[in-house]
Image 1 (cartoon, rainbow, N blue to C red):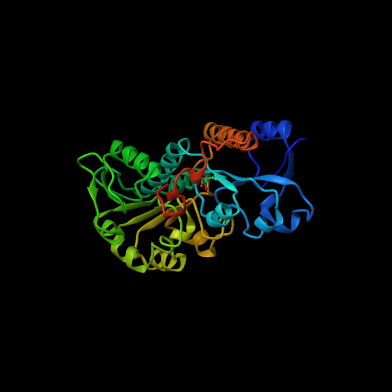
Image 2 (image 1 turned 60 degrees about the vertical axis):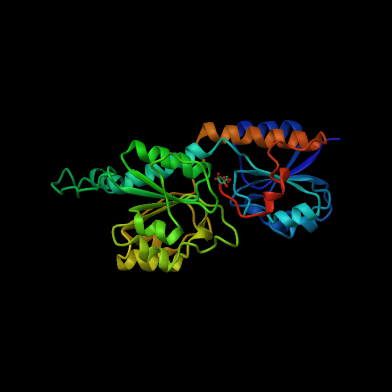
Length: 322
Ligand code: 8YV
């Protein structure tokens, strides 16, 4: 009998076509739990890292075997509830870190070199009319701080060195790093010693609001905050205050606490660069992610433990790096 699955977020057409070939796919736009029929035989939910799974679905889906996340963040899925019910949870490891790091660097360079401002100046005709562009800042010699040295943080640091930046990092556990990368004692120390801090930590109870007033004060009036991880890591009230008062120079944000909703202030402040959660959004990477999702579903339905299961070891329920 064909398996029935729930698809929470649209995927690439090629991947959705494979899903439709193999399974009966029930599409729930935006993860509204009211849309799930009471009497259902859904055995899998395919969802995004940000969308996850509403907790109530565990009760609404009595036949659920796997939550396949098309991403690496597990913060929007209750892992303990899944494990208690013997529901596997899979992610897409090993394929997206490079793209997320590329976006972090793209935003940093765009911010420093005033790419959005220059684009608008030319588009509006103001440059042709004689208005002068403002000077940017060079990345060379800047100190970049990586908050969370997982795969994404590491890829970001390597790229930053190519633009002449020196690397500091904060990571809870010991990690092997090149000799010239400096380890900071804690996140505030990292902010103190850096010009730019990139947030690349997983969101969980112990990291929520890690970027608050104290951190932002330490980053200082020349400092730039870059978030490619999760909005929940940042106290957005404190960030808006710091951006408004000039206690930090700016922020480059790809993620927000209530996506796709964002705080009004972010839309009007001149010193922010905004992206709509596009870190992993390239055709190549989304294809690779979707391929892992397809393989995870295949293996669960074949009675195998998927290679991308987060329950391969007991560390799954502990705070982790991304
Ligand atoms: C994706 C993500 O944008 O990996 C994650 O956790 O949030 C992103 O890669 C998302 O999973 C697709 O919705």
